Length: 442
Image (tube, rainbow, N blue to C red; front, side, top):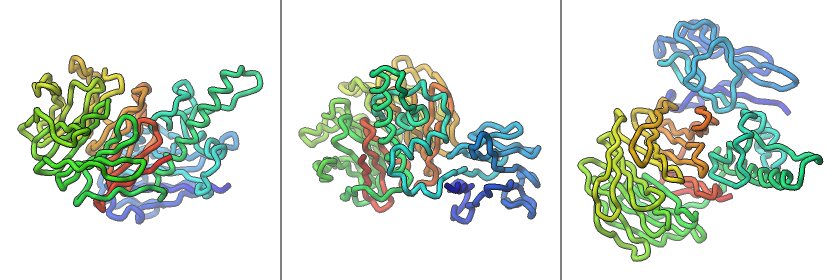
């Protein structure tokens, strides 16, 4: 099987990313820099921090395994992989972000097999994908199918049971394999398969989508000011909720699926009784546009974020503001609670993610994982992996326990600000630029 590699510039760096796509040789090194003799020549006027011969990407074969590594050529401003400076050489993994200096162009490294289109055999999928990830992640395997980001974490550690193992080990291996097969399908869907259903009804761009906890329903909000609730088994719209005067920027289901919270550009946070199909009281009114809302898993507290750079906690019953968390330097665009409700994550236009203790408001950590504005966040069921959508139309999966990026899905055509993954890990939804919602099911 012949390997094919591409070095593709981030969509935020080029009007037409395809013009900045390079096939890398299987036998020869490729030099990146501003000199005309470089195989990948960078515009020195646009990027003055690039060295004449900045970095070299070369094939590396060890133990009959083909890899590629990037070597910094003593550049003045450094070469970075996933925001960490390269000292000497570093082996590349699919999805790695390569930055030539902090102010230079950003590239996405992709490695794919020519026969990738035949990803229909679970065994073949496991063999191909397993080589792209850190084997040490085996300790994080859970036999229960989870969200796509956690299931991706399952892929690296998949192992075959041996005859010497007991029956429980064999059962676990089988369950892990099943979870991994699901993961492969979801990953492949994320990368562009056309097997999806379309939900139509909104009159303008989709701002947000969210699944109910039982994965049976989907709610969406739009620039047209409406909220629509869809029954996924039939693809039919079952509710149209009207009340916001401007765009609906965020929606969230309560854990029991009976109440929906919404936040909009009209500065209002609204609660909706889904059984009655009507707005309930009280309505929380903010001084600024609401960009994001989320229910605490216990259902009594609602969190919101917006242009004032703060995260506010509200009492669902009384409408009283309970707590304000501050620390972001720009508007807060995304909020997510861990399933146990102990931690809340906030994502901002300042390109950072902050983790807070939900009960005290204490800041736990600040993550700088992307060079673009954060648009969406979602935790895996075990709270160890965070899915991060950003303004460059990529989704990153970040392992909180290991403090490292697992992988990146770059350059998607749908709006990363309106994506959702169901709690059973079998559905993925996104808002499309044609005012529709696309739902993939596995």
